[in-house]
Structure formats: C-alpha cells, structure tokens
Image 1 (cartoon, rainbow, N blue to C red):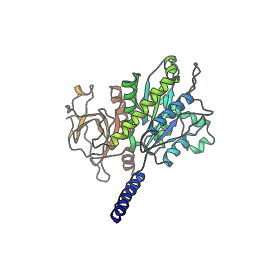
Image 2 (tube, one colour; image 1 turned 60 degrees about the vertical axis):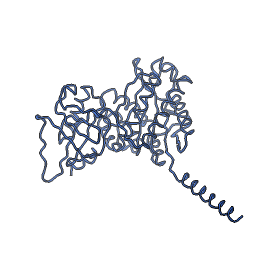
Image 3 (spheres, rainbow, N blue to C red; image 1 turned 90 degrees about the horizontal axis):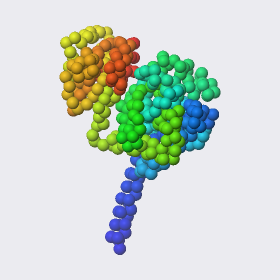
Image 4 (cartoon, one colour; image 1 turned 180 degrees about the vertical axis):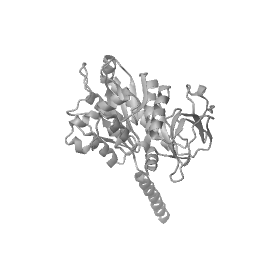
Amino acid sequence: MQKQIKLFLFLALIFSANSMAQTSIKPFVVVLDAGHGGKDPGRPTNFGYKEKDIALDIVLKVGENLEKQDNIKVIYTRSTDVFIELRQRAKIANKADADLFVSIHCNAHNSQAHGTETYVLGLHRNDSNFRVAQQENEVIFLEDDFESNYEGFDPNSPESMIGLTLMQEDYLDQSILLARYVQDNFTYKLKRKNRGVKQAGFWVLHNTYMPSILIETGFITNKTEGDYLNSASGKINMSKSISDAILDYKSKLNSDTPAVIETASNQVDYVDSEVVLPVDAPVVEPSLSKPLIVFKVQIAAGSKKLAPKSYNFNGLDQISRQKSSTIYRYFYGNTTSYSAAVKLLDIAISKGFSDALVVAYKDGEKTSIKQALKSSVN
C-alpha cells in the first residue's frame, strides 16, 4: 500500500512539473492589425467596397486560424469597426511584447492595377512605393493633436519617410522572411499576381519593436479583384494564405537550419570571411581618428558562387563577394558616404535588383545603418 502511495505521489509530482513547464513557455504572440476603421473607411472605390470592412474580415479569419494552434496568442488592434490611431496600433503591439506585427489592407489606384504586395519598412524605392505609404500614413490627419503626437512627421514629405527606416532595421531580416512567405502563398497557392516584397515608409511599421509587415491584399479599385476580396471564398483563401505564412515563419524560427532568402533581402551579422573586389573598385582610406565606416549595396545572396563580374550582375561593376558559411552575398559599390550609397541603391534597383538594400560595415564588421551613421557623425 505504501509503495502504491509513493508511486502515486511520484507520478503526481512529474505531472505537476510537466504542467508547470508547459505553462511557463511564453506563447508566440501575433498582433493582427486591420487597417483603417470607424471614421476612416480607407481608400475610396466606385464599386461599394469598403477597405476597412474587408481588412477586418480577413484579420478575424487569420486570427481564427492561428488560435487553433498550440502556444499562439493572437491580439487584435481592433476587432470591430472602430477608429484606432496609428500610434495606438503600434503601442498595442509593443505593450504585448509581440513576436510579430501584421497589418492588413487593400490597395487602390486610378488604373485597373491588380495583384498583391507585402511591405516591410524601408526607404521608398520609387514613386509607386512612396504613393502607397503616403496614402496609408495620411490617416494621421484624422487624429486629434496629430502635430504633437507625430513630432512633425509629414506623410507628404520624402525626408520624413527616410527618418522612419532606422528604428526597424534590427528586424528587417525577419520581416522580409515573413513577407516572402506571404507573397509566395498568394502567388503559388492562390495564383494571384505577385507585385513583390517591397520597402516603404509606413509609420505604423516604424514604431513597432518586432518584425512587422503590411500586406496589401489586392486592389479594390479593380472590379474583378474587388469582387474576389469582398467574397466569402476570397476572404477565406487570403486569410489562410496569411496564417499559413505566419506558421511557416514560426516553424522556421524554431528549426535548426537558417533561413536563406535567395535575394539581396537577407542580412546577417557575420564578419567578412571572403571579399573579392575588382581592380577598379574605389579605394577607401581609413581615418586615424575615427573607425572606418563603409556602406555597400547588397544586391543578391544565395548558395551559388559567381564571379564578381559585371556580366553576372546586369552590367553593374564594382561588385564584391562575401562568403558566410555556405552562403555567398554580393555587393555593389564601396563608399564612406551614406548619401552616395543611396544613389548606388537607386542604380542597382534600376538594373533589376528590386530587393537591393544598403548595408554598413564598421572596421570590417557588419553593423546597423543606425550605428554606422552615429559613428560617422561622432
């Protein structure tokens, strides 16, 4: 009898310990943000669709899918038709110490443009990206005391947009990875037109302190696409693609194999172990009083080793190659001036490298743009 009691107590102790261990695991927190709402209906359309309603329906279905999974906690910035300020949306995500912030919208244009695109925070690369970010940011004019709350931020100013990019840089890799999963699902599972993963200056992404993306699910100004997004089946399909992408992202984070993006969107904090510069590359002279800060434009990354020659990179010269583990990264240019690097970025994009981005090195080691600019000033 005593042996049975001891065995019972032993098993109870193990069960209790396992239960405590399971409950002590921090859930994976996803903040879902339905764009617009309340007095802000979103972009106008001639077909009767309301962006705020479509976005909310999709968000609620994404949340429903995720809540069926173990150890995932979903938080909504809004679950009804109410107006939520941009800064409040970011505040909700930060207060929750979220692992992801996903903002869902519908696009609009004065043409019959169509297709999906997913944004991460970054410099507006062209007029189209700037226009989309400008439209989404203009909601701040509907808020009370927006002048003081946004510290002089002007949605119509390109200079204001540039200042947004530094805060979110630490999360850019993860944001791009999730954005690619979303776009791949839209493209290959739903056969929607892929308008790509893009960077632009969205205020709501700037002020969140976790990987963050903004999804434009399609154009409600296109009758066919608007009909699809407004339909029950369209909302179900879009929401499943988004929730599946989030689950794939979570699974990748928990796996032992590193995520590799076969474009220039992937940044890592590795020290250069292999650098190959062409003969005509500009020489950067170090300063005796300051650390050497170098800016480059990363244009590609992948497992294939390519000669750093112009014929492999759409005519771009001044190509350097870096090997990190089994991945090769390719860079265009080599300058101590950030403004010069931004001009090089524009050239790279014009040559077809739409995912190119500026990266920085301090005394030969990878650093953030924010830290590089601070070091350059000091």
